[in-house]
Image (cartoon, rainbow, N blue to C red; front, side, top):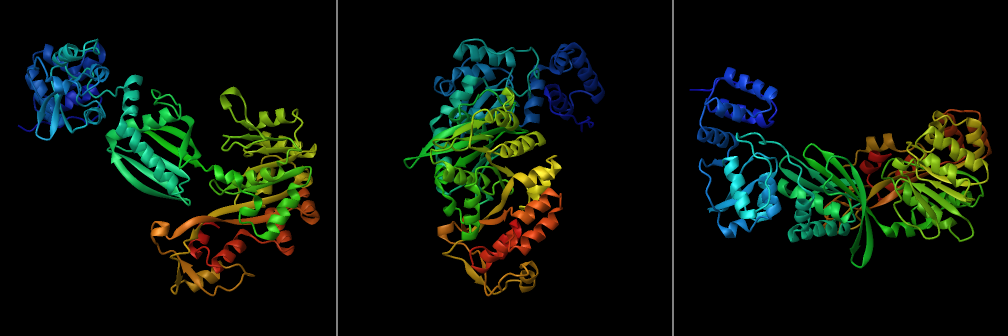
Length: 566
């Protein structure tokens, strides 16, 4: 007899039992609905109520659940399990989850479980045992007795029925997570992935959990690429290992956490900034690879054209005012700011920075990390800085009106302020600050210059190829009016040197807007951005597009890459 359809619901414990009994046609849908309603009012599980009402036998219940869950079932729990199998599981894990390795079956181990649909349980057992497993549902009381006999101690509460804990996601205990994280194969796997990320010059390493898998991706030269798909059972051990390395709370899996890993690679110190975020299928982890060599870059090594670099260096030498670096996330703004600070850090001036977080440590500079729980924000740090007798102040980012006002005030009172904004181009920074409430006349009096920048992928010099099929109409439409003619277009190809990507490394595209008297007057008068750009253009200013086109014509980047970012 085909079972009548029963309303589909989320698979909480009693829902699983109801669906299993309905599928096995062991009770009418109306009876199951009544049992479910009674369960909600009495607190007893559906299985306990069904057994008490003698609607079915315990064997029928076990068989129905086993068939529904796609696992085996046994009506009579064995009195003992083989010692060589029992020893494969840590006692604490077995007691907590109510599992006992029972017997070998062909290529896997059958494991008795009081709760076979506990999410992720099969994967964690297989990982600890080191072999494929098949969960077998058995009488909870019988499994509890078997666990106590072989592993001792107290097991979790056992209900007389089945389903009192079925399907409930149990958060693994701290001790269990520590055991998983310390497994040699987990340690080696995490070390191998970190090694690969650093070797491939990745800026970010992503661990992304899904229903059945853990995806590992690298961001290299601004582009994400999947390098590995691991079994979902490895997600918890791997994430726990990373949290141990970052000194995070491995048992806290419900709230975001941030930490830092100090890693040694080929004799060099590498810092990894760790961000952990709870998701539907577990914790997502992103590691930002902080290349310590980048803090040693001088302004001359950033790739700035000579005229732009000279203008920026001249403004950095001024005693007061505000200099802004602008661009999207990942465009290298922090690296540029650090290069400027390095130029100023001569031991004769006091430099204070407030950052969220402090990415690199610089000798001779006082660096302050934002701490929101403690009330330490960009704005509150800036107010405190003004009482610390600084010469130069670096603000990691201006995010709100209060920070903007204090930064302007600091530059008015004899301090050089360096900061960043997220705007599409240099003059967009003026518009953004005015929108934040900064008076145009104050901005005009303090702003010394804005550097807009992008980071784009450089064509691999070993395999780039001249493109005969370059869209001439498209190139002509995109090219700057005053730009040079494109004599040859180049495209990415792919070779072993660039790991088949066609690109190797990144190059900066810059737009430098120094503030000179005519521009300062226009800013003070509240002129719109298009007017400010016209004043700059008439003074010989080169836009981001001008610089991108120069690199396209030089064969350093492809036209497609330039159009993606500028």
